[in-house]
Image 1: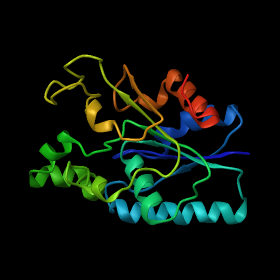
Image 2 (image 1 turned 60 degrees about the horizontal axis):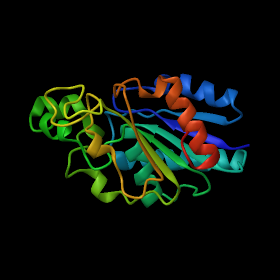
Image 3 (image 1 turned 30 degrees about the horizontal axis):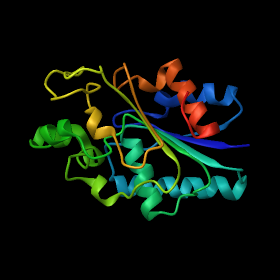
Length: 210
């Protein structure tokens, strides 16, 4: 059976990915929700903890393939772990609304002391000169699904260009993606859409989104 490990984003918990995990289980995947204290440690520390979690799963019950599905910050954690922590390269990887190349909005927030406190340790690494520069391209087939309006102005008017309220469409894109889709939705709830689930299942199963 294929295994899917799901990671939540900044300020969220494992519960934010629970509906997607339940839908994946109904379609025959073994699922695991990896929780981490997103504001209280670095991306590097989260990546190390993820690698230990995955190694524990592999030792107790090896899987045919290990896939990853992430939201926002979670995508950076997995990318860093692929690059530096030796995650299994047997499956596929779907990133939902990732700040793949850093986020303009994060730059604005972390420019102040209050903003850095608000974003926390890992969140403060999401600027355009942040941790993404130390993350390689995923060494497996990967897809990026992100929110947007399809117009010049996004859901948050204070962020220039099309965006999902947090991340600009152009910031989510990553070279080498087998699929890049813009979905009319917000950053916060992209993982709960039925259409997102179908695209995730399609990509994990066949390497292409429906």
